[in-house]
Length: 294
Image 1: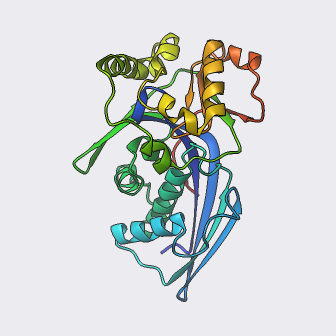
Image 2 (image 1 turned 120 degrees about the vertical axis):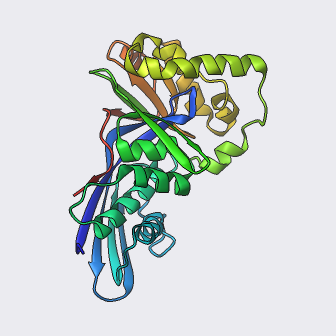
């Protein structure tokens, strides 16, 4: 049994506009977590970086919960453990911090139970989706790149999408936070047939736009199911997204928000510089691989 395991987990975005609950992408923006197996019972949790003054230092910590569930799933036990979490992914901003914590904890458990063995990414995807509830975020954190994923009757299906060379993203991160359950609560139970048809067209085009036809990205990232209903919760984010789209930039609310994400090739992101981003922190990103064991 390994005495120390380290993982690096990427930030993710979900939806990309029309790909609601089924399209995700991982970026070169990481949390790093180290697990030391202790010889005596006990739990120690150290947190630095994002959320250091907000998250619990006990069994309620999301990484701790994920390690525990992973150890049980992989048939391993530890006397005690020390976790050191260095977070750079902002919390409650729509960049997959919860998915990263869950996937990171499960990967740590895999490293303890199967030292030296490659990660069983299918197993991690299934377990992370069961815990997180969204295969788009969980799948992207596990596999990296861009993915199309869905879950049905306990089975998670996932297709990796090969992004074109030069594909990148720009994240616009506000200081305000948004809780996923609150952002879901404002969504309507029904939509008009016209909205459903237009959403289906955009969603059908999105995987093609992300792989072979980036010229379709602007239309494919349009959304009628969730973003406008969440606008009152994040008016500045929604306004920035609209102004970016007015400048011809394929932009969307990242996950449940309030971060705004713009994606594409250089020529598609050229309009970013013409838009006043105000108090939003701007971060330039590239697609990245999935969770890694150190």
